[in-house]
Length: 166
Image (cartoon, rainbow, N blue to C red; front, top):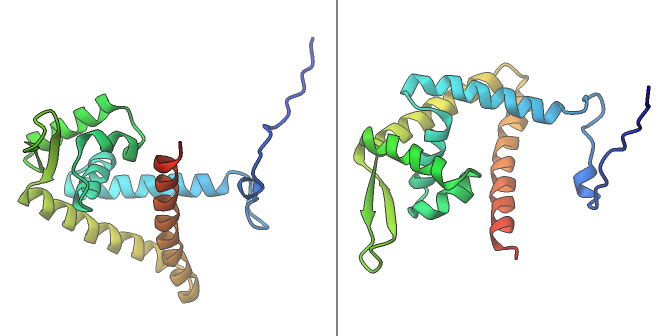
């Protein structure tokens, strides 16, 4: 029998090596994020959307409209985005439009039905997540909801750094 020793990967940034706060097990953050993601995914069935569809509609609702940029923003391959968009177009939630100056470039826009369903999903998910947080003492509830806002900023900054770095 051969014994092997496996060392953890070397991390160059000390910020990346922060450990969970005292009492948290390794992987706790990722597991909680995955658990919350699954709860959101299940809740979206109430408005007949999948999590990837909701993500696309949310990005389009923010004003992004280039099909080419969606793959990077969603962290998926372009063929996956095409399939998602095809499904949303078939449901009349998104429409494709050729841009005036460049016929090769396709813009994506929410239809009125798309605007309605993303607004409905946003309200429903905000209420659902708030109801989960409401099971905590009030100061912890505020901290939990505030941390989601901070994660939104962190993810936006992370995305921006990755798209502007050489």
